[in-house]
Image 1 (tube, one colour):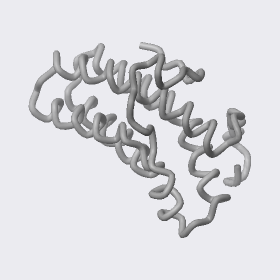
Image 2 (cartoon, rainbow, N blue to C red):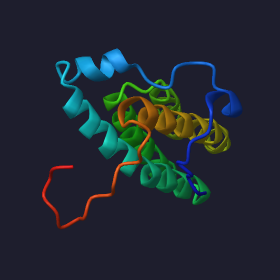
Image 3 (cartoon, one colour):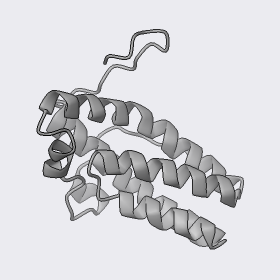
Image 4 (cartoon, helix red, strand yellow):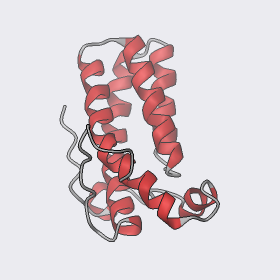
Length: 142
């Protein structure tokens, strides 16, 4: 399962709620917009891989790995104030309960919401510009 982070409108993907809570994001960094942008850039760069790994674990029907990957994604989404974190949490709970077929269904919804989240973050926090991927050997600054 491939995660495409190219922008799609909220209307096109069926989402009617805000993808993230900007006030939560800013409050988590004491109002420092620059740090918020760094967190968002990191999230946008890492989220596609997290979604991709989660999809692979669902394809492999590995409930423990689904639970772990969903938990990690939930934490990353909470860091940016994402409403989709609730879907990641649901997926984590479904994996704990052994509900594999429900995991696939929830993942499909989560993927749609994750795309909307990335679009909203890129537009709202990064001025519409995808962040550059960091060189693994580079310093820790973005």
